[in-house]
Image 1: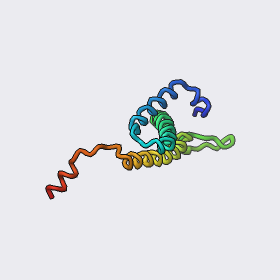
Image 2: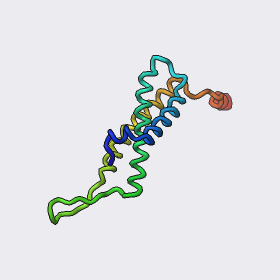
Image 3: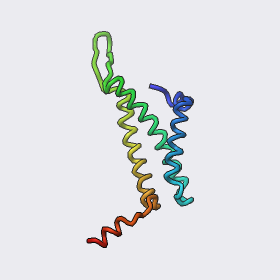
Image 4: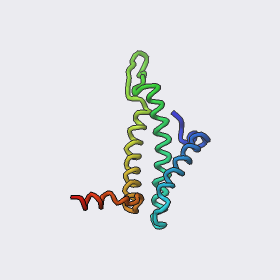
Length: 124
């Protein structure tokens, strides 16, 4: 498993994070300026989590969810892999961030009204 310093120095990882940031920033172009700092922090975290979670998913798919360990000379066993532990912890945080961002999109009118709801109200 890579160290945080190695991840930060990995140009490919940074490229993917920047690409995800650009995508998410596009969703929040119309957000009020007073909320932009909070949203930017959430976008930065969500972008990092997305890239790292994708990397962990690939590793888990290739190597499985367990790893072997050795305690002493003759004691062997299997346990949940460290990557799965990190993934489980990180995905919970990521989902919380995504929920916050989704709630902000809903509150700021990120979606335009297409009139469909009004049409349904008139019909019934």
